[in-house]
Image 1 (cartoon, rainbow, N blue to C red):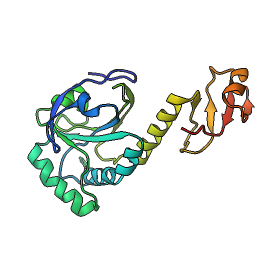
Image 2: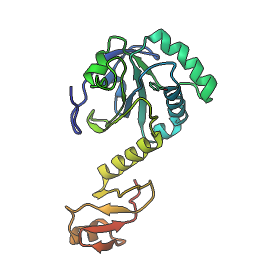
Image 3: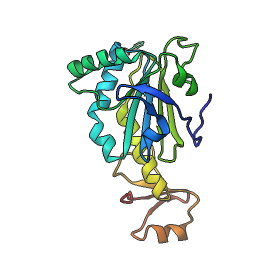
Amino acid sequence: MTLRLGDIVPDFEAATTEGPIQFHQWAGKSWVVLFSHPKNYTPVCTTELGYTAKLSPEFARRNVKAIGLSVDKLEDHHGWARDIEETQGAALNFPLIADPDRKVANLYDMIHPNASDTFTVRSVFVIDPNKKLRLSLTYPASTGRNFDEILRVIDSLQLTDGYKVATPVNWKNGEDVIIVPSVNDEQAKQLFPNGFKTIKPYLRTVPQPKP
Ligand code: BEZ
């Protein structure tokens, strides 16, 4: 199934390291980062999961729940979790889905047969509290993802949901943002009474509104 931005993501039942879940119910009113990794007991995946565990306060601050997935069995997840804690200095603090029959992997198109017909690629899905897909990324098995970038996108999504702004290249939380083109100058004066900068009529910047 091809998932596109704005789609309601499919629901599923799955076994996880924190017990069985019904995905939509588990997500509740939180944002979700659902990500697949190719295989347990592999080095890149070990670093990704350890780093994601360390980011737990950052996820919590943004009302985000993380959940990983691989096509390994639940008992393998438990054994590998001990290695992650030992080698990465952080214990897993989010669920890992065990998907040996590839039910969820197929539902979310996480297996790309021309890359590998056995393992999932490194997919990332950022899902909002309305269960809508807001970002999808696909990385190859050999490249570990940048989870700080995923947090940066979530900051942008949460900000731009609340204000008529967009975020420029390489933007980081706290930096100036762009007034969206659908807002004319008169409206911009109302929305941003402390002023904004017009670099071109279509390129206007303003200090980041406080979320
Ligand atoms: C890894 O996680 O280290 C990995 C997994 C599959 C292929 C290459 C690397």
